[in-house]
Image 1 (cartoon, each protein chain N blue to C red):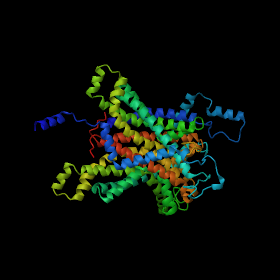
Image 2 (image 1 turned 120 degrees about the vertical axis):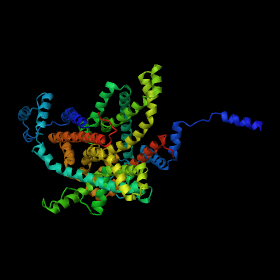
Image 3 (image 1 turned 180 degrees about the vertical axis):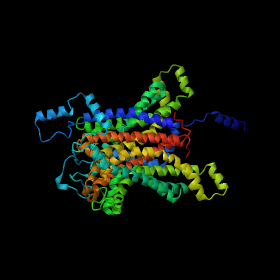
Image 4 (image 1 turned 45 degrees about the horizontal axis):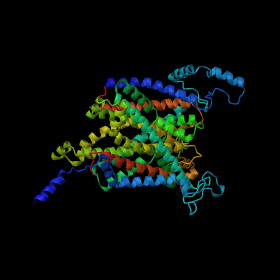
Amino acid sequence: MLKYSLRRILGMIPMLFLISIVVFSLAKLMPGDSLSGEIDPNNTDPAYIEEMREKLGYNDPVHIQYFTWITNFMQGDFGKSTRYKIPASEIIAERLPNTIFLGFSSILITYVLAFIMGIYAGRKPYTIGDNAIGTANYIGLALPSFVAGVFAIYFFSFNLGWFPSNGSVDISTTEGTAGYWLSRIHHVFLPALVLGLLSTASYTQFLRNDIIENSRKDFVRTARAKGTPESKIYNQHILRNSIIPLITFLGFDIVALVGGAIITETIFTYPGIGQLFLNSVSQRDYPVLMTLTMMFSFLTLFGNLVADILYGIVDPRIRLD
Amino acid sequence: MEISTAKNTQINLKPEKGLSPWAIARRKFIKNKLAMTSLIFLIFVTVLSFLAPYITTIDITKINIGSMSLKPSAEHWLGTDKNGRDVFTRLLYGGRVSLLVGISCTLFVILFGTIVGSIAGYFGGIVDSMLMRFTDFVLNFPFLVFVIVLATIFHGKINGLVILILVISLLSWGGVARIVRSKILAEKENEYILAAISIGCSPFKVITKHLLPNVLSTIIVQATILFASMIVAETGLSFLGFGVPSEIPSWGNMLAFANEPDVLQGKPWIWIPPALAITLTILSINFVGEGLKDALNPRSRR
């Protein structure tokens, strides 16, 4: 197991290297000259621009430019944002905690909701409650996150006024107080719910079906024959078996968060890295764009790795070597 | 007495004609009410969208300042948008674009995924590992991020719709390739494949004539799931402003109006129709997909 994990982690390095080449080529192909923020936009003197281009290395052959970029990148120098005129790492570091907070809240809400609904539906299958949960699930699976987001803002923010429709925190609160954190939770709830909608629906369905399947197995019959209370059978004997496969989904959750964050943060104008990514694309802020694309690719690689490794741990029948 | 016995014997001798697997699947599918209703709804939406130019004669390209943001009325069934264009007409035209992009992407993805998957699965060895490493490579790209970057690069250079279809397809075939490969790997162990090879069938013939028909049911089910996710991809990208060019109506572009708070809050007739159209279409595709999965599974008896 350990050997396999190590081999997979080492295997990520060439993959990341290839992805970095793709990212660099794409940035070179993007419209507009990827001039760095070092050049004064008001100075249109061709000689000045040419001098700066030479100085910043834009006249070097492509492979040398790539080499310079990747060397700096490995050393933590992601370049200077052309829009904000400060290092890309600073802007990203400022936004990143918001996205991490959103991601964790989303996973938490997903698990809590899916557990409550899945366990209920699995324990009482084919009842009114189960059918209601099943219907909600079908809708959840069919509702794309951007449609869900728009509906959520319309109903919960505008019509009912329960949740704010944008931002990550109320600006009138001071950092560090309880009110500040309450405000953050208040702001993150709706985007997190929308972000986790699809996984909530699929987890619930998976848990329900697994519980029903397990409740027909022999070990449950034995437990019943021995007179184990019904609640103990469900909460201990069955649940323990049904939770395990669910854990493997965690890796895919990380992958799904990458795309999901871009969409939800944009709809809720939540200042995280997903929104920053879209802004950097439309404003042609190449250093930020490239760094974020590398980050997202790394997260996707990492998520797939976690999924594979967890799969092996959970089901020993799968031989990984 | 003798005669009747003879008759009976004759009847028993006559071989009973069995139903083909496809006929069984069709019967099972038709009996599935939910899937049939969904299929009829999908056909209805498709026909309505593709016949849009014959159903309405309203010009949707013209900006009409006189009838901006009108509420639904007898003249404009679903009202008009901020540029004075009829929402119902745009919904029909939008459906045409969204469904067309969805169908084209699905076809490309299935075609490419099946080719790569069946070659990798059939030949095995070095071909397999090379192709699968490449598939892993493509699967490791964060889909939305790269579609947005690629769409920006090609924006305005080539026809927007074509480039969107190509970009989405280019990044989505990995999953199909993996599934087809694993199915082919299992299927090629059967003796009839060995028999086909031993009588001198070429690899191309073995794959197309013997292997693919037997994994077709998996591919069909995959295609339905893909169709739904491709519609989500198109509408989502258009909603963010990186999909279908904004001058062409599509469900995603229409929903993008909801990005403006005053439309979202005060003019729901502009964005609710496309939102419902997207959701209902995906819901029906999911039901059809589940019905197909059930019908094509020989073990499920309903």
